[in-house]
Image (cartoon, rainbow, N blue to C red; front, side):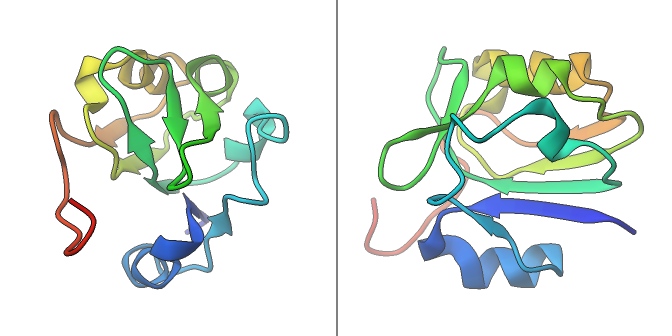
Length: 120
């Protein structure tokens, strides 16, 4: 199975365990480097970034935009399973973007989606 993972450095250890691969980190991955092709060709995508209600971007832990809804909608995600460990997934354009890109399944939730001791 081809797996892609993306997270902030603070989440690297947990995402590595959850996704089973070494994740791409942001930084250095940033909005200007993210193209639709970054997400293509994978069976499973695990993304641990921050979502904001009503906003068409995912952010890293430093508050910088990393992924846009446009990049996801333009990506060929045909047949992919996406685990979006982000807050407010259905309250943002990001869920519709993943589905427009062709993701077969999207796993994510509304509202706050995780507890990280010391961060909330």
